[in-house]
Amino acid sequence: MSQHTIEHSLSKVPEVTLVYWVLKIAATTLGETAGDAVSMSMHLGYLAATAIFAAVFMGAVVAQIRAQRFHPVLYWTTIIATTTLGTTLADFADRSLGIGYAGGALLLTALLCASLVSWQRSMGSIAIDTVHTPKAELFYWVTIMGSQTLGTALGDWTADSAGLGYEGGAVVFGALLVLVVAAYAWTRLSHTALFWAAFVLTRPLGAVVGDFLDKPVSAGGLALDRFAASATILLFITACIVIFKQKAARRAH
Image 1 (cartoon, helix red, strand yellow):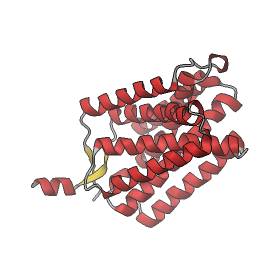
Image 2 (tube, one colour):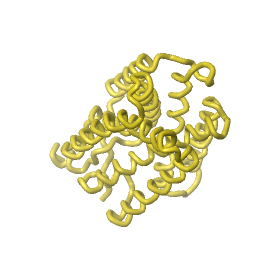
Image 3 (cartoon, helix red, strand yellow):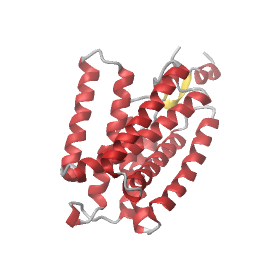
Image 4 (cartoon, helix red, strand yellow):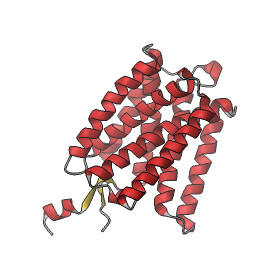
C-alpha cells in the first residue's frame, strides 16, 4: 500500500488511547487556568477574554480544516482553544448575564444535544472515525466547543452551587468517568455515545482541578499563580505530544 493510500485512509483526529484522555484532561485544566488568567488576572473581563479566545479558536479551526492530514500540535492547539473559550464563555453567560450555573448548564446541554442530533441527521454518524471531510469537521468542532462550554458550567455548578467544593467535584466527575469506562468494557452500550459522555465529563473534571489550583485559599483553592500554572500544564502537554507519538484514527468505511 502506498503512502498516499495510507494517508487517504486515515482520519484527521487522533486515535482514542490512554494518552488521548490524559492530554484531554490536561488541556481542559489548562483551559480553566489560562481562561481565568486572561479574564481575571489581566482584568480584561469575561466578554473581552471571550472575544480574544474566539478569534484564536476560529483561526485554529480554519487551519485544522484546511490541513490535509492529522497534525498533533495543530489538533491539540485547537482543543486548547476550545477549552479557554469555553471557560470565559460559560463564565460570561453564568455570571455576567446572570443566567446562573443551573440555567447555563441546562441551556448548554440543549445546545450540545442539538449539535449532535444535527450532525447525526446530516452525516449519518457522530463517530469520530468519520471525521475526514470539512462538513464533518465543522460539526465535530462545533460539538466540541459546546461540550467544553457545558463542562465549565457543570464544574462550577457542582463545586459552588452544589457545595461540593473543588475536591468533591473532582471525585464526582472522576467517579462518573470510571462508570463510563466500566460501561465501555463490560456492556454493549454504544461506544460512540460513551466516547461523547467521557468527552463531556473530562471537561468539568479539568475545570474543577484548574479552579483548585488557582482559586484563593479562602475559596478552597491553592492560590497558585495562574500564569505559572498554565505554563506548567502547557509544558506537560507539549512533552506528552513529543514523547508519545499519536496516530490518526482510521476512517470508517
